[in-house]
Length: 216
Image (cartoon, rainbow, N blue to C red; front, side, top):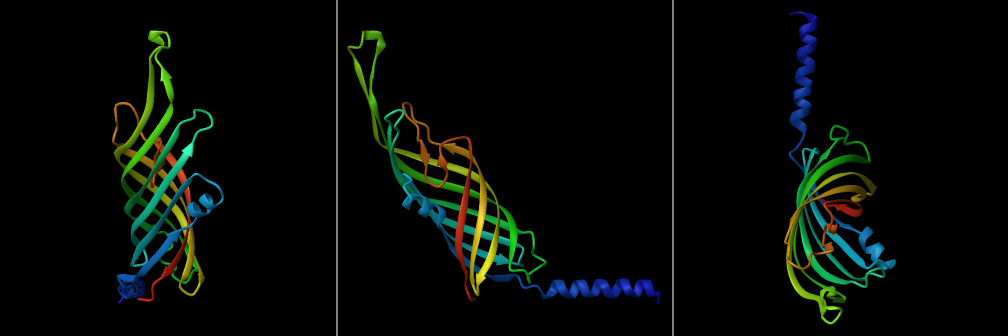
């Protein structure tokens, strides 16, 4: 047998053996997002946080489910518009571990996608408007309460996860958000969408998670 062929065959068999040793299920991680909680306690009118449950498949593919809660109760100093809402939100997606072949490292970099959804009710109040066509005689109140709305969006996520102590971990992530749809009404629209943020076509957010790898 040719030495070069034998060496290539041994290398191929070894690679196959290493591949076969990788278990499909590598564990489950639970976690909570704490940056939104911290911002609210520091004085922000917005509260947003979520809990996550993520599986590890082959140390490469990381499907995830996130359930959160967002609320805002704010009055604009510039416009005197008062906006209030609170509701849960839901996200499902998956991450990819770029360091899947380096399990000895204390952490890894990842990228992923999320699909988000929420159904919520909001109130909006603004100063009474005067109709200029009637010389200021007619005033129109601007007050809408209990407006039902749904919204959907996509997120592109990139970040890192690092082991702290035993099964405890922490992680940072940056999210680029793209709004897909939301319920539109004739006279008003939501300013803030729970789980998404301010109602713009796109947006960015930063998250910080504390996590624990379950021992099973």
